Image (tube, rainbow, N blue to C red; front, side):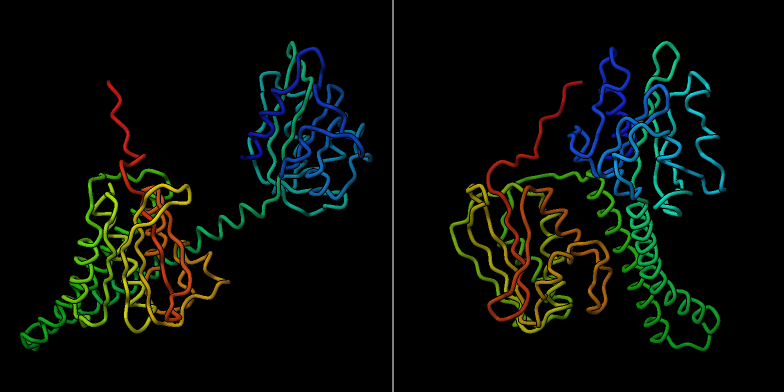
Length: 384
């Protein structure tokens, strides 16, 4: 929940018969806002502070008992990024009577224990007959936004790197072919064009993965469930890897019958299996063992279990909770770092679960549970 939502809720919470509608939050008194992670300050019709919750005290470095009854501008002395007094600019008590508040913005404390600290601040004005009867201010640390900004910058950097590498090859080979067409043999031209095609396919796959990630993260992924034969789906994935050059004895498929009926999106299931097998080949070692067997969900419902295990060094328990993050590669080899993130998103969309542990041979083992029976995510269309 954002800071402005806290402020909006606090602004609506008071009965009309009392100016504040909130208890004065002293050192020994409870408040309905004590558990909020964001700071909350409420001033009455005279501009005196009536509520300052514990999170606000921590952010400002003050005690509630020292702030209650003080002018709100002294308790929360704010300047904007240009150094101007924010309260003088907005003037909530004597400004426009039609103004209902101020949107969230980054401001800085310029006095007191928290001097120089940046906050994200939003305000809501409660008026009675055009007169301001309550000023509700919510504020929080800017570090969450800074982390989000860094994460976005890391994503942009990772995408740029993944796209730039194949495009460099495409640019180099096409420039060479155009400049030396008459001096190149047909075999040389064919080799360069194959390299260009391979890198173009690589960029296409990356863009497809990015689109899948955006759909998964935004909750816009569409599934088309039907009855899926999981052993046959695994066989097709393994056959494709053999056709691309992997030795047949690199894979071991084990199926335990009977299996429950599973309603899944066959294309997305193939994507999940393909990403897990590719991950085992890229980062693991030895034989890749895939098992398909009946299982149960955590709620005890019937399900199908697919495991993909390798014989490599495995994944340490300290980093297992991070491997499903987008662009996380852990410094192990190449790849976009999107494969396992997409796996988790697709499995979650089917109502299943995916986790990683240690394989019996010491490598990594991914366990995917697909629910059996009619899919709960399949909803009838709405008339009209």
